[in-house]
Image 1 (cartoon, rainbow, N blue to C red):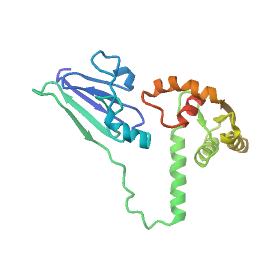
Image 2 (cartoon, rainbow, N blue to C red; image 1 turned 135 degrees about the vertical axis):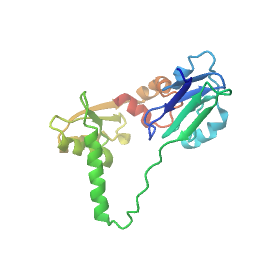
Image 3 (cartoon, rainbow, N blue to C red; image 1 turned 120 degrees about the vertical axis):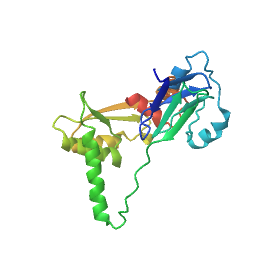
Image 4 (spheres, rainbow, N blue to C red; image 1 turned 180 degrees about the vertical axis):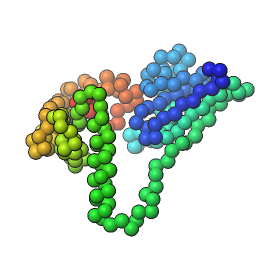
Amino acid sequence: RRRRSLFCARDRLGIKPFYYFWDGSLFAFASEIKALLEHPAIPAALETEVLPEYLAFGYVSEERTLFRGIRKLMPGHRLALDFGAESPRIVIERYWDPPSSGGDAAIDEREWIEETRRRLEQSVEMRLMSDVPLGMFLSGGVDSSAIAAIMKRKTSSPVKTFAVGYRETAFSELSYAAQVARTIGTEHRETVVGMSDFFNALPRLIWHEDEPAAWPSSVSLYFVS
């Protein structure tokens, strides 16, 4: 407050959202777009220039959003704003880059497999540290099955797994998740979504996501959560 300056930063991989509005005099920031739209000076206007990219790929790769004037601070970037300057302006810098491979091209396939396994186990173990009960989403695919198996081996308490599928069994993967749960022995729960559930949830889900839902999996994730 004494220096009349503001410093903001977003985590390296963009796990946590950071949205902001700046028109040269008003600066506002929030973790959700809808919070910014509560300000009377921030309009809910469509940013038409990014619409083609969103329709083609399902997301906007740059800092603009579908709301004109509302931007996102990109992952691994920091933002500074000095209100003590004669003409305050935003300065954005990248503070982190993904690490390079480190020139390990000479490692053979067996060593790569061992290194990948070690890092995967280490990552899962780090995320087992919690003050509240833990669970995991289990689809029955390679990734989630491997994580569930590691959790089972790394913890003494029962592993709770959660799966979501559709009433139309031809499009559901619940049987795969159930098979994995039986094999490794988890406390397994299933959520089944019907067609009416899916479409009735869309208005509420879009409100939560702030922008149009591009992926059907967002709806499934909403129900299992």
